[in-house]
Each structure stands twice: as C-alpha cells, then as structure tokens.
Image 1 (spheres, one colour):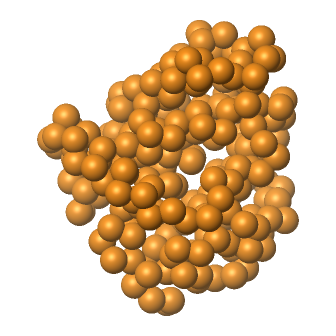
Image 2 (cartoon, rainbow, N blue to C red):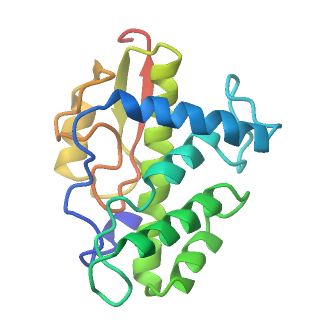
Length: 200
C-alpha cells in the first residue's frame, strides 16, 4: 500500500502548510544545524550525506517545528503543549538515529499511544516535512534562487502535486501553485524538490 492512501484520520489539517515563507525559519534551522553537525562530525553538508545517515538540517527542522501541525493526541483530544513537546522530541531523536526512518520510526510513535496506522501516517509525514523544509533552508543558505517540485513514483499523484510539478521552476521564497512552500502538501505526500541558481 502506498503511504498516500493511509487515511489522515484527523491527525493533520487537510493541507500541510506553514504559511508564507519566513526568514526566521532559515536562521533557526542554520543555528541548530551547526550544533547538530558537531554531534555528527562525519556528515558533510557540502558534498552530501551517506545513504541512511542522519540529515542535520532535517533534524534541526524537527527540533524546532516537529509535530507543529499534529492536531490530536492518541485519545482523539486536541494535542496539548506538553504532548506536542514530547512528540517533537521523539520525532527529532528518530531522525537523528541511523536506520530509524523505516520500521523503528513508526514503532516509536506507536509506543507514544497512536495506532499502527496513525503512527505510519505521522512518521512518513513528519520525515517528509523535516527533510523538505531542512533542504529548503539549506538551499537558501547557500544562495539558491529557484526550486522545482518533483512528483513521487507513487500511484495516483494528487491534483495539487501534479499542478506544482507542472509549474517547473519557481522563485525559492514563493509557494508553489497549491500554496505549499515545499513537499509535503498533504498527509503521506512523498514528493520531493530540487533547488538551483536559475531555471534549467
């Protein structure tokens, strides 16, 4: 089963959007990334990272913004501040642990009290948001000017993601056609983005 067909079950807003671009996102992400990179000295932010290795910019994003869009606690009540803080820490630690992005990540969230289906939904959505926003902040930090939406290989790509891809290149600080700054545009979205100095 594709991630995209896992029901949201009211865990997130229908559209996963943090709003318009805010420069403080980049500042916060860069400051945290420097500290996290010191914890992971083998990571090279310039040439890339080894497959399966933690991605410092994603960890930084999750440290600051993880679980920010999760609406409900495991019992279905609104997620309160303390629960969000604990879930954010769990997500951050999962992304910082090699090999946690597969089965162990959803299992850790399930231990928080969510069902198996809900845990899978949260895991893939939070990992996508952290990776894509972390990459966006990194791209802006090194002077990239444009970005392009890349649709995933999943079946049944939604209309919003299709429209974003059809745009080709857009300015890096502007939202795509659907209103999203980066993938994920919706729960379970597995699209990605690429950045550049100018349209290619």
